[in-house]
Length: 114
Image (cartoon, rainbow, N blue to C red; front, side, top):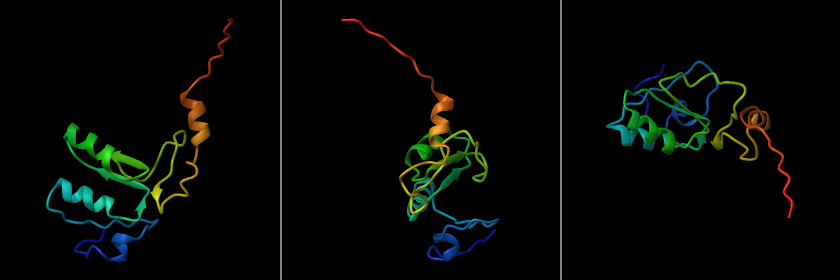
């Protein structure tokens, strides 16, 4: 856990895969959301809150491929699409994408006579 870092520190700006977290102090929710979105990466984002309105807003506005609310940002269900946005993704596919679509949907065959 790293604290008291400037906003341009590599631990804040780079995508690090490891047991590292940079904790930033922000003035309010909007400043926090702006800090999340002021990144060239967007794999996961998370918020801890007891506000349904805030969690819904965060899920809609956070520029990340995966949003976690009151949950750790590491670890995902393997049957749902996974991937980031911006430089955290190829923007061409999501891992488990086709499998997740098959898992959560079903097909129907319809014959229509005219």
